[in-house]
Image 1: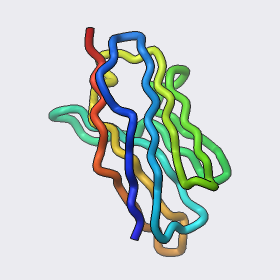
Image 2: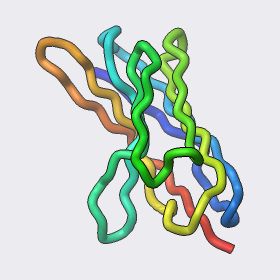
Image 3: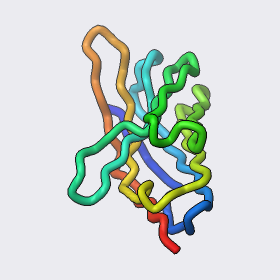
Image 4: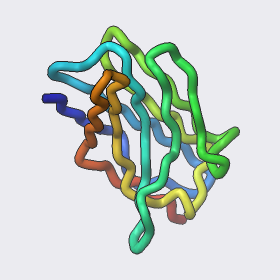
Length: 118
């Protein structure tokens, strides 16, 4: 079993920055993709950014140039640096880990609230 613990959410003004962290613990398959999804009220959960064990990132178009995803494989931790935040970035942000094993398994964190408001 894998446990994901997120931190770093909060309230920030438009144009501000936040950094999210997600630490994974447990039996972690060494080759995996970690990342972030978000869900605003009344909307579906959407991809924000993911990154492979090898460090290759993938971003949603809406956050390209503003958000940066990174990871520390030794710590099984993924980070999301969010700059130039906009009100439309307001959502619950969920950490995600997907193993790239023969039988892929997906794990989710509990979520952390990010609110962008004056």
